[in-house]
Image (cartoon, rainbow, N blue to C red; front, side):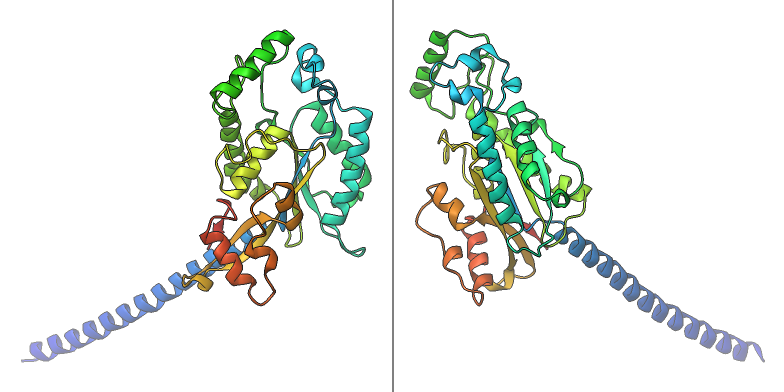
Length: 319
């Protein structure tokens, strides 16, 4: 006669244990989800801190090839990666160094730093060495990254006759400046592909070393590659800047915008880059964008519109 009572007690204890187990599972589950969310948020904030305050593109100083561009003599007689800068190019690089000091450290008390990338070609490494001789020694973040993706537009001039080179350039005009591929060289669309690859790897490069909120990235490269990286940052095709000539030691500055996506009715936030007013004018872009007329109060709205219109380009990192 005691069996039914024992069964009832066991059933009650089992139900109690089951309820406690389910409640514990819910509590632990919530705790686990909260912990994962906290880790993800911390990781996201850490990755966002590694995004630079600005991206700066610098063309090398005048090279011997630039000085003899009418005859292509140096391009024909010297392998492209060995062409050096001239004395004028060195002076231009020193002036660029002073300009970069004002851009990277506008205040005398500033301790902002920069990560430097450079093409392996001699005219670029010489330009960067000269620039660094002007900048404070403590401005560098980590080692200089020499990246072959940043090399010059390969036209295959070395070892060729002046007549052949002139014929190729005439053919390029006839077939389209971006589509024409030089014999044993590249088309401008090939260069655009390299620029795209560099931009795609850019975030990976940043994750290698820590960048603070006030730090920048400086890239010293060539006219052809520089225009295509700028196209990528602007979200434009290869034809947009095309074969436009960029002055030696010209500086393009793309400033960071932290975007609250709620400004456009969305959620989360993003980081994007767009040209500063001087770069905007140097690139001969359409009349001043909203970004340059923005006030502190409507900066978030303006940045969102830049992203929405792709004026800030595809280099957008969202939460």
